[in-house]
Length: 67
Image (tube, rainbow, N blue to C red; front, side):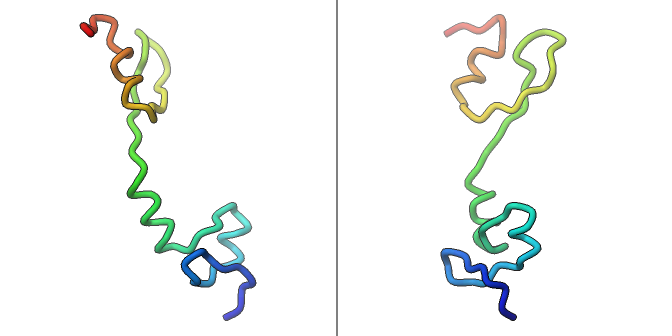
């Protein structure tokens, strides 16, 4: 099959994947997803959940922190 899109590893990418914004093949996308780690926390009382990507930010989510 010829899709016209190729990943950095050389594998062809389905045009439907590219249409929704993914420019890597499934296997490379899986490797990239395993590298990323996220935590969801509530940084203040009765606040909305927020995505925390920097581990240092978790130190400031607890109002009774001791640093």
